[in-house]
Every structure is written in structure tokens, then in C-alpha cells.
Amino acid sequence: MTGNQIKGKGFRGALRYNLEKVNKDVAEILDHSFASTFERTIMKEIQMVKVLRPNLQKYFYHTSINFPPGEDLPNDKMKQIGLDYLEANGFTQHQFIMFRHYDADHPHLHILVNRIGYDGSVVSDSNDFARSEKILRELESKYNLTQVPSSKEAKMRAITKDELEMIKRTNTPSHKVKLQGIVRKILQDKPRLTTEEFIKALHRNMVDVLFNQASTGYVSGISYQYKGVIIKGAKLGDDFKWGSIKNKINYDQERDREVIQQINAKSKFGKGLSAQQDDRRLCKTPESSKNLIPTSLSDGHYLEDLIRADSQPEINIERALKLRKKKIDNKVFCVFK
Image (cartoon, rainbow, N blue to C red):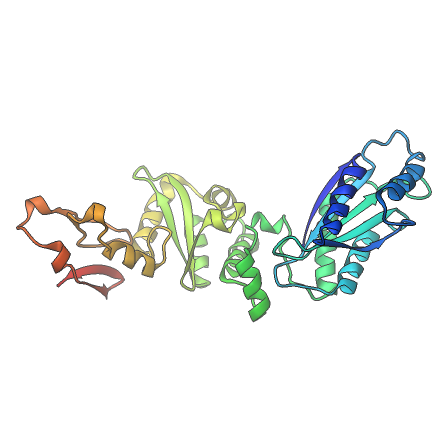
């Protein structure tokens, strides 16, 4: 589950928005603490409590709790999760109303709360985002729901809808989640590894790497390959970008220049594509490049020795191009027949 929070002084606007959803049959009220669910009644009761803290500006708390696609819980269970969330946040003696929405591709709750309690006490909003995430992780465990990385972990990039569905279907984490765990554990277990030690640790965990290295030796990015899946560091999350990684290991551009060059030369994958995608890309002859014939690959990068048709004997590429892919020593060649 993920949670979004808003604090302010506009209870009426959020209430009206949600009640309109109910009137349109795309939402329903699961629970509330008011005498009735009419806007006028609710706002009258809110004002009666608000006078206990007339100087408090941001008395209104609004959270949406979002469940993964496919995690379609019955109303009674979703209601109990909402109530547990309120209790864990300290909203035990506070006015609230809870809505379930049906207007998105995933189940979600909206809960509107008065931060001012019936006794005039106010729930602190200090560290409320961290507190909310901790509560959500506990509720996921309590109700056996899909475990979603917190924002702290998911400086690791958030998992996608397809990945969530796969996790639920197979009960195993995706390759991306596993890869995040591998890299994070290496960095935590042995801080300040040299670049070479970091790469060897990845290799021991069946992870291959490719660096985006300029001729000057400057490295601007890193990509990972795990079980045939290639993911750029930026796609894994901020903690896995090269800009973050190099600050967590003992990296020196001049010293490690040759090491990285050698790793790139031995790398078994191309720039951000799987080997299959690379094969198809190389062996394709789009309209814009019919006069170019790619002939070889080496050092883990595509070195396209392009032979222009105007410097070759005349050939009918339309008719003659029947491509066959051959893999030799991890190099791929397009063979013309």
C-alpha cells in the first residue's frame, strides 16, 4: 500500500469532492463518526469541535491509501484497515469519514479527519509521512497484503503495475526487486569497496554491469543485467544511479579507468538493450539505412563498420538481404546470404 497525505484548512472542499463521487456511484462511504452524511450536518459538527482550537490553521487531515491493482479487498476488510490506520496515527477520538473509490485501476480509500480531538487535543503532524509509511508496512504484514517498498527503500524505483501483478501471481519478487536487493546488500555489507571489488561482488551474485564511459575515462552511468533482464541504474532508483554508487564505494576515475574499460570489453550486453533486442536492432535494415551494411561487433559494443553502397559493387539489397544471426564467442554477426 502507498499513502498520500494533505493537511490544510479546507475540509469542506474535500468532503464535497468525495460526496460527489458517491452521488456518481464511483465511491461509497465505509464508515464515519457523524450524525449523518449530509455535507451541512458534517460541517456543522466539524465547526463545533474546531472552536476548541480556534487558532489552529491546518486542522484538516486527508489521506488516500492505495492498494496494488488486483488486490480487491471486501469492504469490511478495507474498512478495518482504515480504522487500524487511524488508530495507529493517534486519531482515536477524532471526527472522520472514510470513502472507498472505484474510479481508478486500483482499489483505494480516502479518509478525511479532524486533527482536533473531542477533548481539544491535536495530533502532531511532525514526521507524519515517516509514521504513515511505517504503519502501512505493519498493516501489509498484519493483513497479508503485497509488500510495497517504502519511499526510503524505494529511492529504489517504485514497482510497476505489471510487477505488482506478477508478484501477486507468482508470490515471488520481480527481477528488478531482486536486483535492487542484491546491490543494496553488497553496499551495506562492505562499505567503501573498491570499484573492482564492487564489480566482483556483483558477478558473484550473477549480475553483469556495463558503464557509460567516455574516452576521457569519465563515467556518467551504469546498467545492470540480471537473469537476462537489463536495467539502467536510473530505472532501479536514485540509490542505484552511478552518481550515488560512486559515492558509496572507493572510486577514483584515473585509477579505475582501465578496470572499467576491461569490464565493458567483457560485458555480455549492449547499451540498455537485451541481447535479443540488440540482435534485432542490428540486423534490421530500415528505409533510412538501406545503403548501410553493418558487418561486425566487438568489445561488448556495436562497432558498426558501415560500408556505403556507392563505394561497393552494385547490389540489390531489397532482394539480397536475407539475414541470419550467428553467435560466436559472445559476438553477433549479421550474415548476408
